[in-house]
Image (cartoon, rainbow, N blue to C red):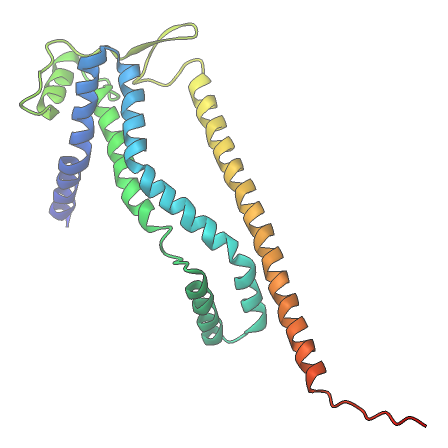
Amino acid sequence: MGQILAQIGQFFNYIITEPIFNVLMVLYHLFGNMALSIIVLTLIVRLALFPLTLRQLKSTKATQAIQPLIADVKKKYKDQKEQYQAMQAIYKEYGVNPVAGCLPLLVQLPVLYGLFFALRDALNVNNANTLNYLHTLNSLIYPFLPKFIIPPDPYMMWFGGPINLGHPDPTHILPILAGLATFLQLNGRGKSSSKSNASANGSSSARRRTRNNSASARRRGNTPKRNVSRS
């Protein structure tokens, strides 16, 4: 079992981590600045994953939009089989696949993990000595790319002076900015889902009123007219 996991790890590094690492090294040779290289690499990864992210967001929004209908089905049918059949009919009617939102995430996660491991190897997070660090870097670089004679500069000019990108931010500004960006992103998604649910509730109520009006009209049409005799 251990050998199988090791082979899987080597395959993961070969197809994901090492390509991302080598792109970062190319960017460092171009810009000569590790911070700028990481920013550009992150943008490249985000752009590459954007179609999957967009597809996931559309699927999630469509699933959230029909949640009021799903809730109505759960209230109406107590039997699990009837609930399943009614929900499948709703999914088919609105063209929603409840699993479609998870599939893009399965592709994105390995890439994000590969980005993490590539940055860990590039920034000497483990604080290896210079010789071991250079050996690790040059062993991961593709043969057709230039090797390093001296380690890349991991420092970035920041508030209070240069900081090592391989170490935690002593000013705590970067983690605060990351947390704030995540909060704003999640808050924006929450507002979007609330608007979608409100719209779905309105459309669901409108459909119910239409069905009730149609039923009332049919009942009025089937009611026999009374003969009125004039005196």
